[in-house]
Amino acid sequence: MKRLKITVDGQVYDVTVEEIADDVSAPAPAAPPPAADRTPPAQAAAPAPAARAKPQLGTAGEGAVVSPITGTVLKVLVSVGATVKANDPVLKLEAMKLESAVVAPVSGTVKSIDVADGELVREGQALLTIE
Image (spheres, rainbow, N blue to C red):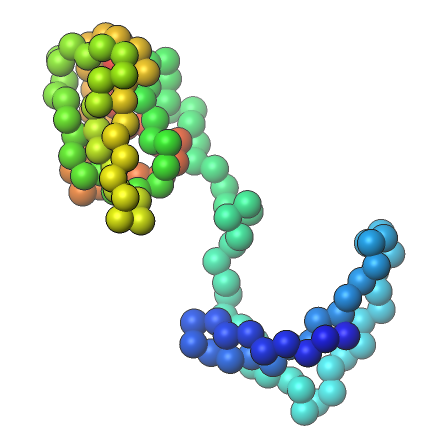
């Protein structure tokens, strides 16, 4: 067993961690911590990135341009009815102070724009549709 000190949102917690063997099929018996080692329970933590649900992509149909990252729409560079070529920039996103251009995956006409400047978007969310 190892004793560790962990800080979460400025709150310090003393925890005891039990090391287990590579064979995790048999659970190790849990012993209650001594009364002196008990600390207040941590507030509910945000789920780990791998545990977060992916955005529903069912609404992103054929011709949809989807966000490659989670971020903020800085500027929509096209308007409905505009003709675009494959690899033309159609939108700018910002994530962690870095700007990224979203390009048209195909040539065609912009059918709809589903986001606005300043809007927060999630990875996989439909941004606009090209036909």
